[in-house]
Image: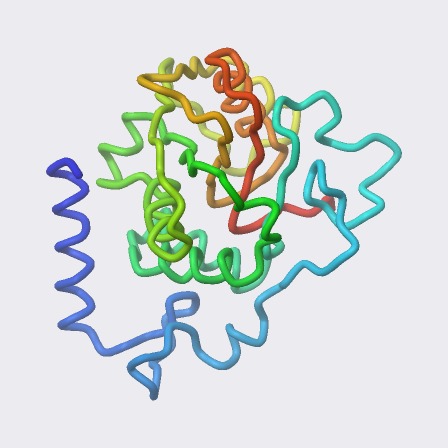
Length: 235
């Protein structure tokens, strides 16, 4: 953990100690200090249910052509749709620095992930661009991976590095996201695991996951799958 990550965690812990407990999603006051979500946000979580396409993680049938057709990862899965209170939780972690959200996300992933997805895997967080990591003081995917490792006992290999100019993807369409992912230079540093499970907060088009998977494949990784907290559904 570098100095910026340590400072971000200290700020989050100090805020939690000084501010009354509030819902991590909507920030409404909580009667139960041990709760993480209010009743309304908990009920509004948009859980994804079977049947689902194993390749892209969308509800099946995923369309005339699977969005993950030709992707370098074998399988993708997320417990929730990127909507409602799940979207609010993603924003709380990424933009408000609500670090406890990462533990909640990991708990929900671990509680519902298919066992075949996790068995024997090494967790590989999708890296943020160094400029964004410095600005935020943390890497959200790394926090989720660490919390998931603590719950599952799986090892973590933060072996991916991102270079190139940072790109803005918020609100970008599918073509723009794929073009941005193609411009990102991803490489593997150190030993790569034989079976990698990419970890990210949101699976939108799959372009970034595909770029990460291709870097891992190039480094000799035999099996690559992906798990995200939330999956963006087609409009």
